[in-house]
Picture 1 (tube, rainbow, N blue to C red):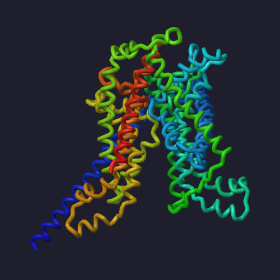
Picture 2 (tube, helix red, strand yellow):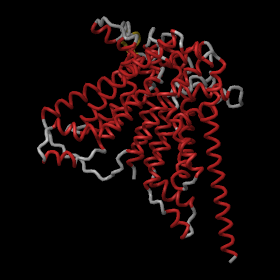
Picture 3 (tube, rainbow, N blue to C red):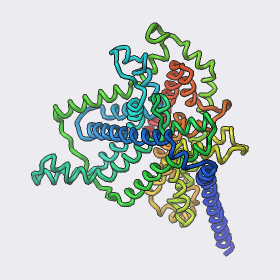
Picture 4 (spheres, rainbow, N blue to C red):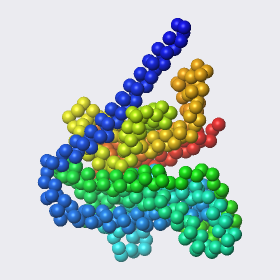
Length: 533
């Protein structure tokens, strides 16, 4: 009798702690996401909104942003579809290697792609000198090229996943019925790809239109909305004007988020599929090899030129090996800023993973009304561009004890990158038997032991991917932290625009190369840990 009363007391106490924990998470995410955005929205009333949005500079920037984003999105997604088809629907070898190479641009900041183009096609660029090219990289077409390089890997991986999930059964039935390839494409392929490709298009468009790294490097006189926002806030401290632009940049991201959620809800819920049986075909496979090889070389070209430029004495006059550029970058505190970045990335990864796991456990394994609110808050950062989040944090946290410290950079990065890792662990927890906790309670096993001994070991690969996602993105991000960093806590990625502005391209290349090497080491370590039994 006394034992039952004690057990009931323990259960009530545990449930009380769980409710408090969920409520604290909701309050914390509200304070970190909703409140800064509200502060930014309120800030727009300090300026003449009509005057800003009808100004010649704004309208020109808006036109440039929409035009180049649309063109870059079409090119990026088209290229991603072709290469994903080559990997998924041909019998070529080295598919894993090609996939890794084509994903490499994700490991360097977007601004590095712009610098890579400057080194290759600038006034004194490698390709410009080699072939005496008559055109200039600066302007709208330079931005489009850089944006395609920057956004292509995400589009490629998304489209590749769509190919991998496709069922071959309808195609086999169509073959038996005597349908031609074109008829199969119209009747089967287009309907299957239609909805997921809309998601890919919106995702890539949002990436491009909210990025300021590439336009900052190769835009020249072509100003985009993010660059205008960056110049107004950093250069002239016009936070009201920046807030107006920030809210406008939220619109495509919000639309993309709504479209994605709608498509996911109405999407195909079948999980049983038959894999494609691909037979070798010489002409098709040769074409796929050619396309994958050329694309891989193009993707690797910025990394190659970074490596060359970083360690030659003076391109193109003196190509002898030297370490003076590395030494010069270290003299300008690149070493200290690298330590700052590693410190931020590790803390963001550890705290972000813990927060995502906790939130996902409450929303999946312990559903309630509060859990529904928590889930909504957890996926909300998907629709907030980094540059908008950074500005909202400046306005909301300015004057507080965390402003100008490592804490605000860590918080901004966690919130900026939180949704994708959260959704990863959310889906993983949802696939694990939902009766584990009930069985555990019957056997006298606590929730903590179920989590520690069953859920976390089963989710090991997902947790490693989450850690990798937080770390890599924290190392390469510029947009979310550009408004928040000070001299003492500056991440190394912010040295790239600084060095480029001082015409020290060799030092900018060194920094890009360092970030790439560290991210490659991290990715390789995660891959080894996932393979380790």
